[in-house]
Image (tube, rainbow, N blue to C red; front, side, top):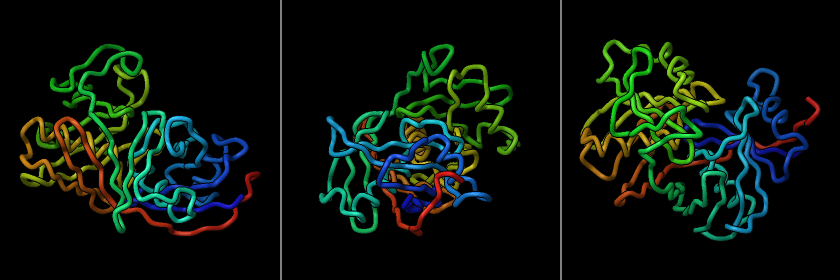
Length: 266
């Protein structure tokens, strides 16, 4: 199968024009960094009755994902590179709803939508207010959703925090019926934060777009940052977040790394 590899602030993806025969097994095989090409997930397009096109995304472990902020930027760049969509602004159907993307030179702007501060069933075993801290074992944090489930853990609210230890513990807390992405957030100044993410289905990644969104939005409503135009420093680079009332926009680059052929039987 013809495959294309893209990266978006270090979050890397395999893209195909066609649906693999078995997307779950294909993701597990090709995303393996020792026996495959290596990636955080796979993406492929399909027809949509609701938007210009549909994005299908599977994590590296083969699990189906509702949405990926970096993935949708890589997907949009792929659609433009391959002339599958011939517009600078278009809509993409995801399992987390319809997202509008805009191609702006080397960057892609994604209208993520509103951040949900009140999360409950079926994702959680009980309803949680994202304004109120929750204690995960010994770790204080907050639960939010943008279609994908997230926790925000502030470094300054947790003394001597070992994120390598805390990430899996929080992700597997009894509160969750489905595993969240766990975001560790450091406040750098009035408009800049740093985020490191332990992702569901992928583990530690160099960047998580939806994680940057929820971290920036929550830090803003908490008053930890004052500007509605926020810089997010992630291990893989820099993202930008714009907040307009309750709507959040994610802005960042994405580019092709390689293309080639992969044997689906691997």
